[in-house]
Amino acid sequence: MSLVRQNFHEECEAGINRQINMELYASYLYLAMSHHFDREDVALPGFRKFFAKQSEEEREHAIKLMKYQCKRGGRIVYKDIAKPQKSEWASGLEAMETALKIEREVNDSLLALHEVATKHNDGQFCDFLECTEYLEEQVDSIKQFADFVTNLRRVGPDCQKKLNKQVNAELRASYLYLAMAQYFGNEKVALPGFNKFFEKASKEEREHAIMLMQYINKRGGKIDYMDISRPEKTEWESGREAIENTLGTEKEVLKSFLDLHETALRDNDYHLCNHLQTEFITEQIESIERLESYLTKLNRCGEGLGEFLFDKELQNGGGSVH
View 1 (cartoon, rainbow, N blue to C red):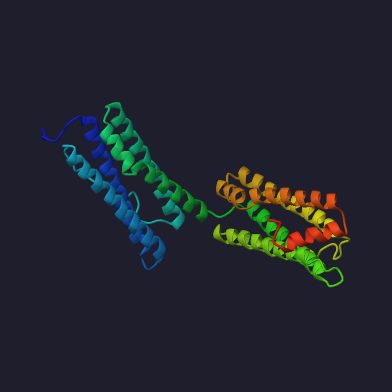
View 2: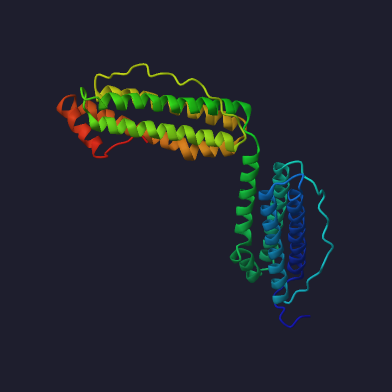
């Protein structure tokens, strides 16, 4: 019996040895993956570098556990490290899916080990698993692999079709706001605040379209370039009418986003759902609320002097669609 051993249950000792073996197996697997992607007939250096790094990290985890085992007076039991079940992967996606499965198994094993430590009132061991960030790091790792898997999976055909429709909707809005900007910039109308407001709005809608196009590419989809419908009108009786038209357009864009979100949810494409929610939908709702407040203000102040003063407010940077 080691002289340093104190309050260290045999079940904890055995659990650490199992975890060491699991970490070394993961390291061995990632090493195999790294060299698979280094082959000249595969030649994916990014994947090679990534899995080489993962292999080294898993090995370091095993070494930390070994040192802790010795520190607590336990005995390291060196077991055979099972060979990887395969040495070739059909694609980066298949390798990432395999890695995700392993990371989840490692996480389950760590949680079980934490339960053993808790059962035997081994606060020191619990702190080691928590404070060395093993558990938190493992959760982050699973999320990372899950995101990689999602990104490597092609977006579904229904979602791709509606993403392309959304791109077109954003470009139509950009075209409309560009026409509005030029109208209010005309010397016969001379409302520079509205001109500035709609120029900015046009640019923002174009940026949204580009973001969606980049997402389609990122997910392995195909961008379908459609005709961009011309604005139905090129003159507006007042700034209030233009804001009212803008509000209607933004509501249509939101409806289209929500329809796309519903399709993604039906297809279990949670990555797309999250992307839409965080990058577009919340902002779209806020834009509609902002435009409604502008319309209320314009209705209250009326045309003429009231519109002139509101234009001054816009000119001084007091408003935007998004």
